[in-house]
Length: 146
Image (tube, rainbow, N blue to C red; front, side, top):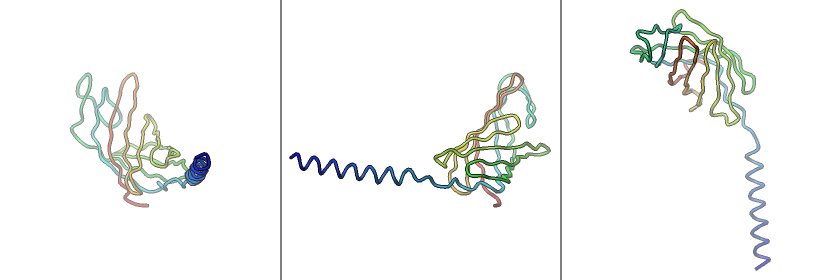
């Protein structure tokens, strides 16, 4: 019985070493360089560069705004570029998390969380909170060019 237990323990340790060994090898982060587009509505309080408040308190947008994200540079899991919509343009910086499936971005006045669905699809949620305005929105970006 003792020999069987030692055998099972040895097999278990070898199996664990194999799993840990292969799991420790990090994959390269996905390449996000390219042009990404997506449209969204938002809930917001107060006016912001993209929407004018129609009333005091929460406003639910009725029109969609298309945003274009041009990621022009990436080094490992860090990236930078610009975003634009209409006459506005902002600097964008971001980082891909170690799981290579999520991350964060920041523009001139707000923050994003992101979830990388596949090589050409990213889900983003945006928020900013200032004394005069707040915004929350989530949408999908699709790669239009590499």
